[in-house]
Length: 338
Image (cartoon, rainbow, N blue to C red; front, side):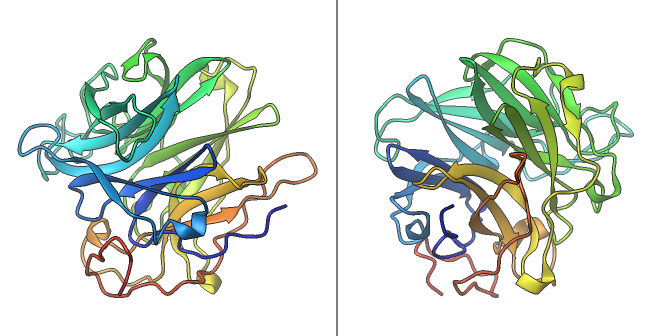
C-alpha cells in the first residue's frame, strides 16, 4: 500500500473537494469560499495541488438562476469530454417551496461541458439545468459509469418527505439529460443525519471488487457533519432501492484527537500505485461564529483508504493535518499563504 499523502490539507479553504486522476495528473475543484465561481487546478501529486495555479473556468451570472451561491462543483470525464456538475441559485434567500415543508435555499443542478483536451485552457459551454422531474432545492450531483451506462446521483428536497434533502439516482440519456425517473435511495432518518438539519447530500461512488460504495454526508455543515454509506452489488439493478443497503451508523466522523471536525462531502481518487484515496473536507476548530456555510475554513484533505481481508473499506477517522491551517476567517489567495 502507498504511504499516506505527503501533506494535508491538500488545498486550504476548498470545501466539497473533487479530485479526478487523468493521464497521470490530479485535477481538483471544490467550492470557492465566495461562492461566485468555478475553479480548477492540476498537479502530478496530491500534495502539490496547493501550490498549483488555480484557473477560473466559469463565473456566476449577473442575474437569474445561476447568479448566487455556486456550490460543490464536480469534474467528470464522460465519453472523452469533461463535465462539471454544480449547484446555483437565483438569490441568497431561504424559503419553503411548499407551505409546511422545511425551508431551504433555491438551488438547482447545472452542467458545463468542455470538448477540449485541457480543461484548464479549453472552452466551457453551458448545458443548462438538469431536469430532475420536479422543481425544488437540488444540489450535489455526481456521476459514475457502470457497464457503459452513465448514472447521476444527486440531492434534492421532496416536500412530501421530512427534511431538507434526500438522495436520488437515475440513468442518463446524455450527461445533462436524465433517461429515467428519479429513484429515492436514502432520506435522513437516523439521529446522526438530522443534527441541525435533516440532510443527505454530497454523494460519491466507489466501484471496487464487484461492489459499489455510495458515500454521502448528513446533518448541518458544522462539526456535526459526518459521512454515511450505501452499498450495492455491482451487477444488481442500481435503480432498484432494494439493491442498496444503508449503514445505520456513520462511517467517517470527527476526531478531536486529530483536531479534525465535520469531515464529509467526499470524493474518491487513486494513488499512482492504484490505491484508493479518500478526499474530503474538514474543519480544525469547533467554535464557529455565525452560519457555518460562511466560515471559509473547510479544508480539502486526502488519505489512503485501506481495505480488510474481505475487500471492504476500513474507513477509520481523519488523520491529523501536517500543514498549518488558518484560524482567521479571511479568504486566502489561491496559494494559501497566510
